[in-house]
Image 1: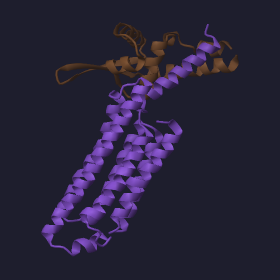
Image 2 (image 1 turned 30 degrees about the vertical axis):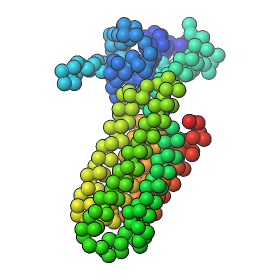
Image 3 (image 1 turned 120 degrees about the vertical axis):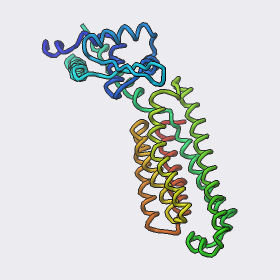
Length: 98
Length: 211
């Protein structure tokens, strides 16, 4: 039992962060505005969760210019992918155990 | 600690977000039905008003006319096909807007942009090839090319929408390939590929998902 829960990752303990990770797991990259629209959250809220995930090395930021407009997109890192899979597994196990 | 209910909610949300963010699901089965009916109408217009119910086999037909008349005829047929295409896209667009509105989703997002890019790339290649075939008088291969490239476009775009679109694409592609080996019966393959297959797809989707 203890093993199962140890995989529940504190970094993902928020619906917004779960959302960001879910989007990036199935898409090569996603830009800020599209993320905002998909998850239906405010700029500030999204930015702070992105920052947290970035600091933990779960996602990476790609800054580009499209013409003259800056365009920021995000993608999941190798670590993020592994950690998120473990987290999902832990969630599933938790449901099965109880 | 997390409760079971929370975990289930989390997993549900994850699944929904993964789907919403990677697939465009605001497609209506009615678009397929309309496209099918329009394609059959277009074929009938071509048959009765442009070809004038001449011999059903294109080859015989074109062989029996002067080159000037054949050229006018070709462009008339192309215009007919173009009108069918534009009207089909128009209706698909209207039905999608309506469906997206009902689900509270937007129609113009990163997924729909990717869907369109993947759809139009093979269509563009096919369109250019068809113009080349027209110029070089390879009439037999025009409708097979329409079907094959349309099929490839759907296979390509199927990754970004319902899985059924992918299978529709494969059927269109097969229809086109068969048509390429049976020259002269293009109009029938057109009716089957763009008419009957579309209506079939539309009815299946409509029964599965509603409007």
